[in-house]
Amino acid sequence: MTGKLIPYVCVGLLMASLIIAAAWFLFHVPIRGNLFTLMVLTLLYIFVCLGIGLLASTVAHNQQQATRSS
Image (cartoon, rainbow, N blue to C red):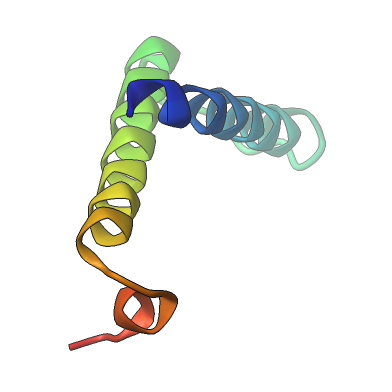
């Protein structure tokens, strides 16, 4: 299970890093606070989102059940 999540976590962290860098360099958005804390919380957010998706795909028997909102 973890082996399936690791590539998506790496892609998510890369995308988050590129977005933060673009915001800072291209748009001059100041990054206030600790950058390490931001990346750790981003990592936690990515793991939680991927975990919820993995839970939904494990519980659902087909794609229609996985996409049902209720």
